Image (cartoon, rainbow, N blue to C red; front, side, top):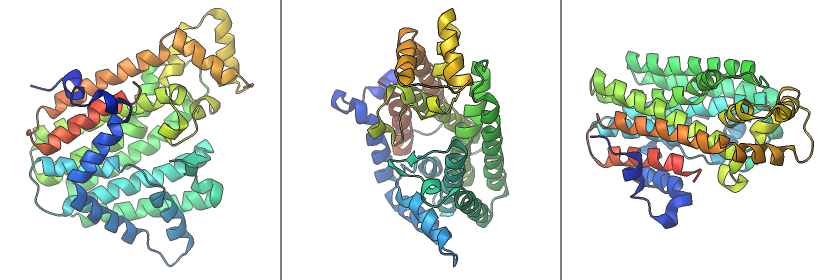
Length: 346
């Protein structure tokens, strides 16, 4: 039987509530310490190039930190099924490189100035440089996929990379579009965020040779976790703190992104308020105090609370997926990651 979200969250003490997710990430990092050290070494090797700008810019991204959630999902999914080889190291490194490349491209597209509490590469070196180094990192990721010598895994991760790119383009069609629906938003989240989570978990299960049924369960776990994680991120853009997020609060608002809190707020707005949303999102004409006003409207109409509730639903589904896997230290760590990922907004 799958543990419920509430039952899993009970293992988190009240004093850890606001930092429960970081605790769960640290616990998983400790569990996978040797594997992660090997992954980091692989990543550093991949960053090497005689073109000095490449290791400098890529090193800035790597050294900026990051929780390494996606590669840990690959490692934990392989170890979950008692995998004893080392192929999961290359796959986990490939997953992190795909993620890193998309971050470089994202920051250029979104004109972001801050990531993980530090200036973004596009601000330091420029947009052209960030895009080209992102392309280099993508190429290294594919080299690692090939080196793993597993055609099925190559298919899963290469497809995930393609879906992420589709999600980026799809997001452009919803940006500033106040007619965007929940379904349109979910399609973006499933492509931009959840696809790599799902690819990370399925690739780990695949290389462990656990069988189709369990591979599909781990893929579904990753996808549901990815959606829940992104929903909470979108809620925190209106309800969080910059020290917690590692980015500027309100970035989504300023960029006119149609995230779920905005979709809910517009759907529930009174006639005069719809004019406000049209001005600040569709037209991008924002004034001092508009962000505070947007947050007030969201709080009044439960837009943020319902976004968190939606995330909890996906988290419950992720735990149900995990019930199809063996019970061990790795499944417990994966369950904790789910429960605490949604507790970030509590």
